[in-house]
Structures are given as structure tokens and as C-alpha cells.
Length: 91
Image (cartoon, rainbow, N blue to C red):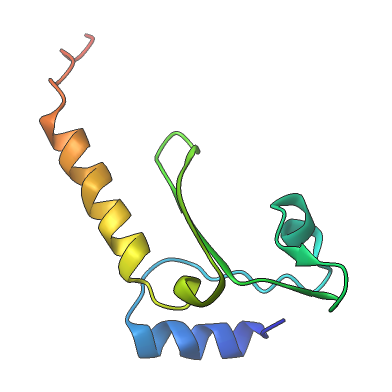
């Protein structure tokens, strides 16, 4: 597992603005099905979560290191949100 400082530096290098998880106890890794029992380590994973808290996109393994897939998923979610008719505001 990568340390908080290592994740912060990795995020800076990539220019990402979202948080990176350092899961030392492997609780989240196991909960999301990324834990590898044989190696004792988790597979890398990138999850795109919408404003309602629903997972909309998952990258696992080597592709999770490259933020391109997550950024494309975020762009698609933004486009869909902008295309939705706006609800009238309640007084």
C-alpha cells in the first residue's frame, strides 16, 4: 500500500484534484473486491463516484494508474448532467 505522502506526490505528478486512498488496513480494498488473498496486497483501483454517491466507473489494475479513463468518465457524467432539463427551484 502506498503512504499518504506517496499518494500526494503521485497525485501532484498527475495533476489530479481528487483524493487518493491509502488503505493500510485493507478494509476498503476488501470491501470493494480488490484484495488479492495470495499476494496479501490490493489491486489498484480508481472509482468515479457521482454527486449522489453512486459508483459510475471503475478502472482496475494497470489502467487505474492512468487517470485518463476516470477523466473521460467524469466528462461524460458532466455532459449528461448539463443535458438534463433543469428542475424549477422551490421557494
